[in-house]
Length: 132
Length: 96
Image: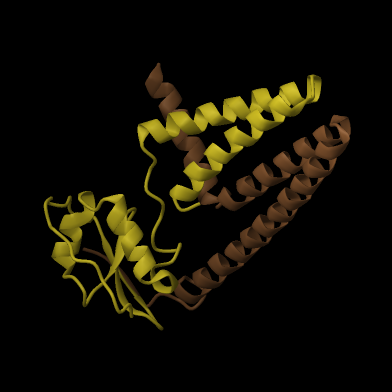
């Protein structure tokens, strides 16, 4: 069990059937509020957990994951959908990387290589920031 | 129009996150920089040639480290999945 757990604020009413209880042999009861986050039953009540389904921001899920990565893990915490700006940036970086690679193949040189590396670095940052 | 691009970007990021591709893209960045600088070092003047060669070697080593991190991360994710997931069975699964 994690030693440090974050506190929560309930601000939304959940739709019915928005979560599930799962019991794992070596962990205990885990409340899974797919596709957002899993919580331990003894840390927060089922209803309270379900109420938070629409209210848990990414910062909380990251703190939950950091509190007990071995238990919450990648299994029980699917990634949060990226924001619109992040999606457009990712798409733009892929296009820029394609342009850079094409230019590098055709023309060669330092500039196209740097463009490709920059675009890929942006894409890597976006993917890594979303838990990938 | 912007929404279409946004949806495409969301699908792209979600797919990359799902396969946990962040580390391998970071590896590509390092390798890309190493190849570019290594290639550039061939046409550089003598003092800069050594500099670009050294930087390319350092970035190549960074790429190898990032690749090892990727494999470690994949291994740890699989281990975690086995510990928590269906391998050992889920006793109870009900809706609330």
